[in-house]
Image (cartoon, rainbow, N blue to C red; front, side, top):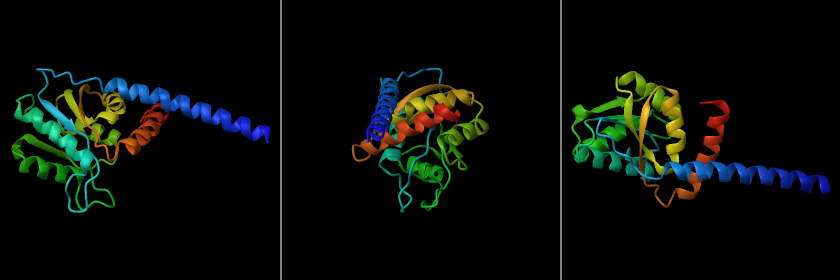
Length: 189
């Protein structure tokens, strides 16, 4: 019995340490946007879309954030990323494009990347559809640490822009992102 308690205690300790470290890393990245007048392109990382092809709350927050940048003249081009999941009626990028157009963004200013299925692929594939390397990366605040790491890994010089996490998904998102960040650090992808 003592052996199992020791194993449990060590596992719990490692888990708490990993969660605390990654949680702090995620929180540090959320410290605030730093707009850069030399950046004209934003990459919006994909996320879930609903059955009716509308953005789910986290994706809507990302899109609303990039619309703010567009309307205030901070960006000229928006790259939307994301393929089609098995439970999605269209690609994430096409749903994002539709939302942006409905909210006043010119279709000529939107570039689609529609093959990716992960954050790494979002960024790696975006590198092939735009020439710019100094870009804004727009994603949910909890996602910025991993997104920055991966953006730099594929050759971008990113300026991170945080979209707020909807309260309805915050707890689940932070746990999931903690595990994803650990996986990214371990496997470098």
